[in-house]
Image (tube, rainbow, N blue to C red; front, side, top):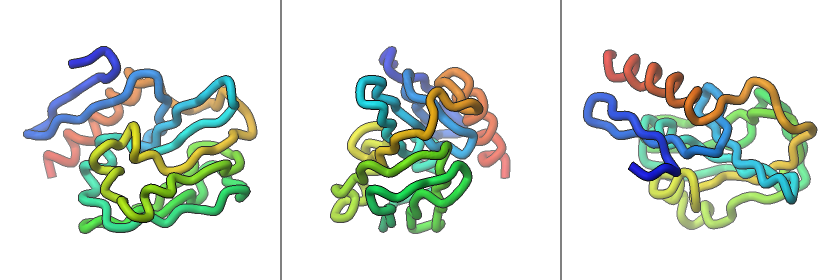
Length: 149
């Protein structure tokens, strides 16, 4: 296992958590670029794996404001329609246009080319987000609960 990721195995599935990102309990990650003041957001490995193969993504327009807990994007998979909620208040500065033609990037590279949007937070740091170690604990519990069903 590389030092860039924490890993856990639940049932027969391996889930990775990228070190350095912040997470909310709904499996949304934020990677803040301190120099630009902009955070990229995406779905955690666990969230994309448990949701299924992504078929379509609906993203907001750059310039739109987003509010914590409100819809940020919609990800349609073969199993579910996932409403992605913003982890904090801010303004959309960019969207991942590659997802229009290749939504499967979310499944193939959730912490890299599968990012969803870039947001300039209304304030930073944001309270309530988890670091990789804290999220690994939450995510492992969620994965174990799901596997037990």
